[in-house]
Each structure stands twice: as C-alpha cells, then as structure tokens.
Amino acid sequence: MIPFNKPHFSGKETLYIEDALKGGHISGDGKYTNKCQQFFEQRYGFGKCLLTTSCSDALEMAAILLNIQPGDEVIVPSYTFVSTANAFVRQGARIVFADSLPSHPNIDKDTLEALITKKTKAIVPVHYAGVACDMDTIMELANRYEIYVVEDAAQAVDSFYTGGDGLKKPLGSIGHLATFSFHETKNLTSGEGGMLVINDPQFVDRAEVVWEKGTNRAAFFRGEVDKYGWVDLGSSFLPSDILAAFLWAQIENLDDIQNQRKQHWNAYYTRLHQWADAKGIMLQHTPDYATNNAHMFYMVCKNMKQRSALITHLKAYGILAVFHYLSLHKSPFYRNKHDGRALIQSDRYSDTLVRLPFYYELNGNDIDYIVKTIKKGIS
Ligand SMILES: *Cc1c(COP(=O)(O)O)cnc(C)c1O
Image 1 (cartoon, rainbow, N blue to C red):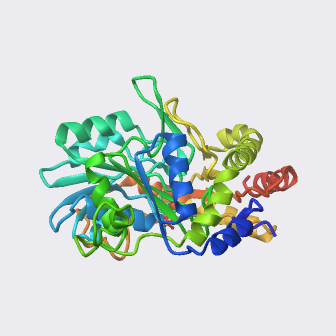
Image 2: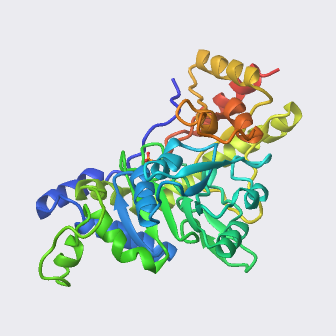
C-alpha cells in the first residue's frame, strides 16, 4: 500500500524532546520555541514570529489583531481550507469569496478589486501548493484601499515571490501578517503546529499579549513590567516547548527535506507532463514570479468522472490519491450566507483536482509504479 502521506522524522526529535524535559521548562515560550522563532526571523527576514498550536490558531490571532468586527468584510478564496475563512467568521466578519485562476487554484487577482467595498478589512491570499499569489497586485490594492493582507502561507514554507522590483521575497514576508502550518501533512511538521508572522510592527506588542491569554506575561518575564495581568483579548495560542523541540529537529533538516521533496516532484513531473498534455490533464503551473517548494503534486482532471475513476483505479492497485477542498461558498455552513456569485474555477478544482502520494520516504520505484498505474487507468 502506498499511503497518501507519511510524516517524516529527521531522527533527532526525541533527543530534543528529552533535552526540553531535562531543562524543566515544557510550557510555551521556552528555549526551543525561541530557537524556532529566531530561525524563521533570521533565515527569511520575517518580522516577529510566534509559534502557535496550529495555522488555524495563527489565523484566529490575525483576526483578533486586525480587530475584525461584525459587519466587516474579508476577501478569501473559496478554494481553501475552512480555517482561512473560519478564523474571521468567529470575529463576526462576512466572508466575500473570490474565485481561483483558470491556470492555478490561487486567488484570481483580476476579480479582487470589484469585491472591495468600504467594509473590506482584509484580503487573505492562500499560496496554494506553496506557489505564490500575485503579491504585487494584491499589496497595491491593499495599500490603495487601506486593507490589510494576511498571507495564508500554511503550505508555503521556503517558497518565494519575485515582484516587479526584482527582489526575491520569501512567502510570509510580504503581507502585514502571515500564517504557517506544521501539521503532519506539511513540509515541516510537529504533528499539529503553526506560526504567526507579524511583519507590520504596529501589531507586535499586542500579538504577544493575545498569544499569552490576553496578559502581558511575556513582558513581565523580560522584566519590562513589574506585574502581569489581563490587558486584552487572547487565548492560549502558544504550543508547549515539547512540540517546539520536535519542530526544531525538523527545521535543522529543512534543506534535506526540501531537496528530497523537490526530487520527488521533478520525478513525477518529468514522467507525467507530456502524457498529461496529450490527455487534457493539467499539472501545476508555476508562474515566473513564483517558486515551487514541492509541497504537493496534483493533477487537474478533465471532469469529476475521470477523477473518481482514477482514484478508484489507483486504490485497486494499492495507491491512495485524494482530493480535498470543496468550494467554501457552497458549504453547508456558508452557502446561505454567500452572495450568490458563481465561482466557476473554485468549483472546477473541487470537482477535478487530485493529489498524488507525496512524502519524504517515497522513492523512485514508488513513483514509477504510481505513474505507470495512472497511465494504465486513464485511456
Ligand atoms: C493546512 C492548512 C491550514 C490549517 O493548518 P492547521 O495547522 O492544520 O490549522 C490552513 N490553510 C491552509 C491553506 C492549509 O493548507
């Protein structure tokens, strides 16, 4: 059986967890939490980084920091994970769903301006499959209309965007805020885990308070205030240092993980792309301004029938391929709140996108077998 996903352990996870235990500090904001946060701040030039228990939590922190209120509008792609929208709905926002590009599940920038109203507070571009959205256009709109941008970079660790200024910017460094996930299915993992990146300095102090249950505890431990108390909204968004120790073992191996995943991605692509073209199946398109961080390998089938047949066929040969997002504007929770616009591309990806097995331990033989089986299954 070839599973769809298998978490990769770099080998030092338990060693660092034991070290955290020995150190005696296993709650949040400990030694390993700081090591992880500093890594991201230094390697990618991110603003302040705060580890969270998930990307969903980081998105919820973002919604609190932006003071999202009932009546505010937030623009979110319909083809994304529920948390991208949920975090803002919890604060009372109305979600204005945007469609995807015909060439890629990323948000269609050309449809955005028409969605902006006086109530629009934020745009949340999702870098699907770790491929950058057109950030120049999104940031220009955001600046012009005074809207905040929260990058949902859950899938986008170690991926980049090159804008009109020619600078290669890490995803997560561009929006006012950005969120990452270290869920089991992501390139770096701690089982469950996430991170909020605060690039706009106006949010830094408050972010630390929201992170620590609405208290100024972090400032207290730095000796900046002589007592700590309840000063704002918040929750327990910070992970145990045990999880951060696990994550640190992964971070140390980031380059190895990325090299291995890129090899797998290229192996799939070279074996599939000519065949896919001939069959009218679309593979990942990486625009010139984006990089590919080998988060996933997906195919966009011609229709739902072809996709269902393919998934069933692969299963019969012991290969687990999956599809995921269903358009959020049509979800049982949101369809009655949606404004009724058709979002054709989002529906198309919901119906036709399939993700192939993708994880560190895959090898060339597995990929050969998967590719051969796919080609046998689609006539
Ligand atoms: C994985 C994912 C999330 C949620 O991440 P968690 O860490 O599981 O909360 C959010 N958005 C996108 C685009 C994701 O891929």
